[in-house]
Amino acid sequence: MLMEGYVSTSVAARHQTLTGDVALTASNRFDRWVLKRIQGTVATAPVRFALWDGFAVPLDLASPVATIVFKNRRALVSWAWDSELNFGETYMAGTVDVCGDLGAMLEAVYRAWTKKPNIRPGSLRQPRNTVGAARANVHHHYDLGNEFYRLWLDREMVYTCAYFPTADCTLEAAQVAKMNLVCRKLRLKPGERVVEAGSGWGALAMFMAQKYGVSVRAFNVSAEQVAYARARVKERGLADRVEFVEDDYRNIRGEYDAFVSIGMLEHVGLAEYPQFGKSMDRSLARHGRGLLHFIGRNEPAPLNRWIRKRIFPGAYPPALREVFEHVTEPHGFSILDVENLRLHYAKTLEHWRARFAQHADEARAMFDEHFQRAWSLYLAGSQAAFATGSMQLFQIVFARGDSNAIPWTRRSVG
Image (cartoon, rainbow, N blue to C red):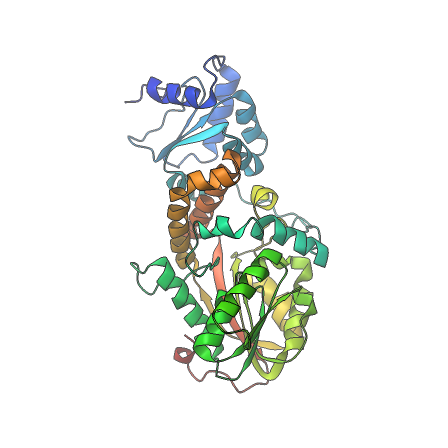
């Protein structure tokens, strides 16, 4: 039971124990004023905000979904100064903790957040993802080690949004359904040639070859992923139909019947979209068609700075119009189909979070406590972003503007 203005002594004691510091000074009027200002930015959220000594901003709610506890003054002031960056920094460091469900808290905060992104001219600019920068960014995230990702991904190591035909579909079945959906939208036929930009651990390339009879050339700058995929393709006897190339998408050459990119466009960077479009144009035959599957937004906005700093350096989730303006329109491509799978991504992340939580101790042993907390926050925040519509998951199908080798009805594209 919460007394007015204070969290229960058991909760306060628990958080003092977690910090290992039971001699913190009592909060003062300034601390409480800052806490109330922070709570005011999400005033309608069913979330309680508390300080290290037990003081909490009263809520007109019997049961908040969670309590956010600041363990020291530095963490508190850092939130007031820059919550976008320092929420993640303080949670990762353990100087802010959450009593209750982290995902439910984040979803409530996202829905209640009163501040709109301040999109000033030039604010979407970021360092260009040159070939060297792109390789470094990929190394930061995707080369953490195959054993780490094996802890919580599906058997095929697919690290992109799954497709759930039914709500009770397993993650494994949903990832297979996603790969089937992609292949049907591309209308793949035996004997065709496919180029893939950004191949992950190779699941889609091998699926296309094995199930649809095509040959695939897949480009990826992650050395660990390429090595893993090459080993798997030999094990499955597909080396004559699937080639994994450790190289940048800008160096794709040759002519192909289909171009596919799953979960990569958001890592290309807005400034490099013209180069990405040129690679598509250079690669596709006159009758060719393509599919892009990517995280996006309803309107242009930069990615959260903490995510860019700690998880995905160089990433930018585009609005559809940015993709059309800079990638497809300059080369006369026609958009044939657009689908938004954001709720499927929220469901995918629900599965990933559950698996990651089951293996939290192993992730902590591989890296450290800060890393484990950062990734728990990243997965929970991503699920909340897709559940609340802050992020979208787009699939677009395109073809040459003068090509009549296109679907007659929508039924034939998925």
